[in-house]
Image (cartoon, rainbow, N blue to C red):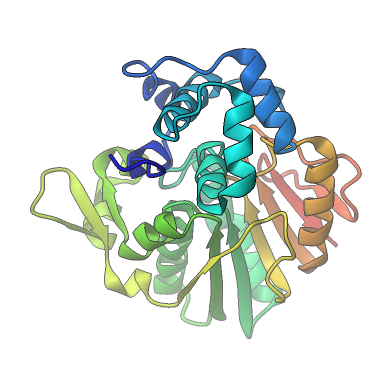
Length: 295
């Protein structure tokens, strides 16, 4: 493998924290804890945020260091300062998206049953959605499936404007293709798989139907920068985007994001994540874990 390039499978979303660490079970030696802490400090990341995926991430990073010919962390940091491509690769290796279709299924049931009908009534012309940190598109397509099924029962739903963003251009390209292993669909009912996916010739590989691919706006975006200049009615911030950063960066990023949320609007974070208590204007919804109203 050429120096400076990494296997794309090492940075693809995984469907559980355990799956990330399983990637580390064979191959290269693991990065030492003190070196890992030094790297996290360099990128303003949180040591505690990597608690459940530390093993897998340290293995990835050590492999990248070896590919670049770096024996010490100081050598690695020097390369990252000079080489933008290597720095981008390192940042991607530090990001672990836990992503599959309908992850946290009770949330999606609540969206379909309560929250989306309410939001559609409040915004009868157009509903604007942002899937931030969309990874390979499982979340955006999950929303499309729910919306399509609602539309089948209610013809008067508003138009949908759905933006899906991620920092990783290669992963966005995969999201556009909409091709997934069966393991990513394990929470999708069989009848939904038949209705919304096409089985490919390769065993246990599926592609989302073209009707659900249409209308999604895929954009490369770092959630620490200024958000898309659209007022969104619903923002998904679920794929551990908040987890890996220090609280000061979390708060700054969240403040920007909340400014782009309409009133009323819904912010939806991961069930394992905590929304900072001083996030302006947000109140926890009693309907589902990780759902906040801006009223």
